[in-house]
Image (cartoon, rainbow, N blue to C red; front, side):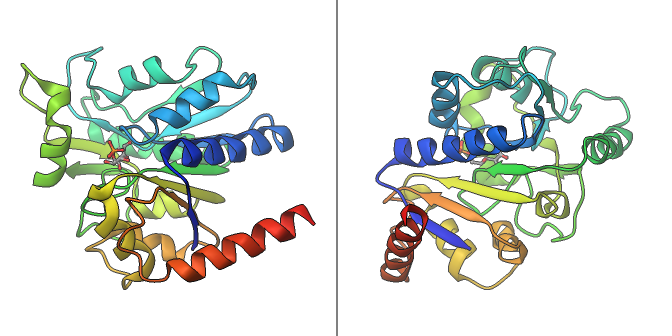
Length: 251
Ligand code: F6R
C-alpha cells in the first residue's frame, strides 16, 4: 500500500484530481468508482475547477441509503447532483428505492461488468474502518448487497437526516467488488480517522477493519492529511519512499 503524506486535505484532493485527470487523458471513456461523504468534497470542488471532459465517462457510486424519500438531500443521489457534473457524465448509484433490493444489487454488479469494470475506484474511510458501507465484520469477498449500518456510522451521518427517521440500511458495493477495480485511491482526513488509517495500513488483514482488505489489492494509494496519519508507526519510511518516488518521476 502506498501511503502519501499530504500537507492537508486540499493537497490530498488535488493529488487525487491529478490521478483522475491523467486517467482521462489516457482513457477519455474511463469508468470511475466514486465516494460520497465529507472527505471527498474538496476533491469534487477541485474536479469542477479543472476543464475536464466527463462526456464519455461512466461512474458508479459505492453506495446509497435504502428507503429515503425520492430527492431527499441526505441521499447520495442528491449529493452527486450537488457535487459532480451528473449531466456531463453517466452517473449510476445503487437503487436504494427498489422494491426488490437483491435484484437491484445484482443488476448493479451486472452494470459494472457491462461497463468493463472500474478503472479507478476512489474511497473514503469510516472511523470504524468501513469502505463503502462495508461495516466491520463484512466478508472480504462480498459483492453489492444490503448492509445494516453500524452505530458509529449512524451517529456520524445523523446530521444529514434531521426531521426524518434516519436510514438504517444501505445498498453498498461489496469489498470483493471494490477490490476488482484496476486502481484504488483512498482519501483520509482528520483525527477521527487516525486509528482506522493505522489499522488499514499497518494492522492485520481483518474483517474488523474492512479497509485492511486493500492490503490484498495490487497497488492501492492512500492520500492522508497529517491528522489522519497521526497514529501511523512507519511515517519515516513513507516520507523517504515518497521523496524517492517523486525523484524517480521527475528524473
Ligand atoms: C460514502 C462511503 C463511506 C464514506 C465514509 C467516510 O460513499 O462509502 O465509506 O467514505 O463513511 O465518510 P466521511 O468522508 O463523511 O467521513
